[in-house]
Image 1: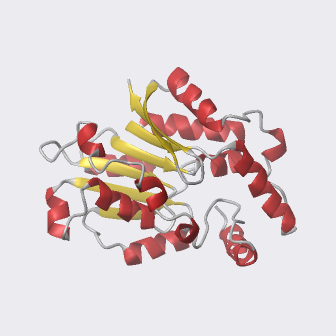
Image 2 (image 1 turned 30 degrees about the vertical axis):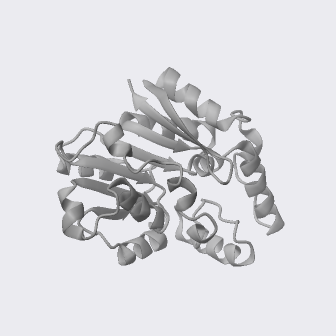
Length: 251
């Protein structure tokens, strides 16, 4: 991603907090705090999925982690809020968060309270995946046990078209045993495009030509189940923004 695009988005967000072409909001968790998702998820999620302290290190991937607040809160939620770094290490859960905005990743790295258990890297998953494979190799695993893809699909879809969306879903399915997905509904696409027009910026390149429209969560589920060897095993209801949290498992 070009640095100038991200810098322009940061300037635009001062005028409109909801305007960020790639979803890289500079203060995202101030208006969508981690609790909006965590309140729907049981603290025993990893144990419920069959991952416990007695097994190999459980690997969690957070796609589009922004400045890391949700990654850290999610980690603490999953391991039932460890009292210290040593306790979290004994629980043997490692979380990797990535985002294409290097400034947000730098903030996440600087404020990370559990650097031995949580790490952050800059990465654009559409362009480069070797870092994810290297991370898996370092942990002696072929896949992440749980992948979080929360409010990311729309931004990939708008900036890379239908093929980009399907590529993202296929890629995450190929490296994940479980996938927790929150897909933005179609009304969010229209709102994102409207914000850019309001600021006098050019529209999303693919917005008017997208063929995948309507029930976005439904489209994602269809692709994952029909083409990626995954199946929906649980829905955790809807967030305060009325978005479904869907959990898929590799068959």
